[in-house]
Length: 111
Image (cartoon, rainbow, N blue to C red):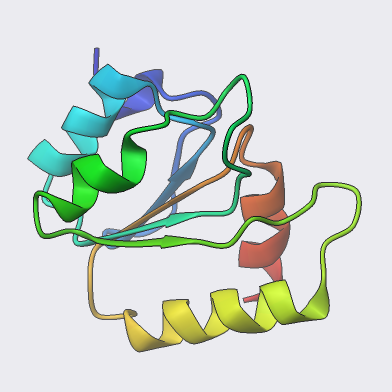
């Protein structure tokens, strides 16, 4: 198993990878590959979310941001917050995900 096992995984650049929701084992691969910032555009407390995800990363000194973007109703403020995070950390290694890499793909296209 590797990052490529994450649903809809895409390596966009040497510093940015995106994907669907990683499972608990895949979270470990993100850590092992020295990602410095994780951005989650998915919702908490869903059947696909990993409840301990934020704790997993923050305990390992990886910056973690969650912007709960509603799939059928993304807000301009969600995008602005996302763009600010990406710009602030553009020199860092980023892993960005949501449930299926659809919200992320749309936001990355706008980036």
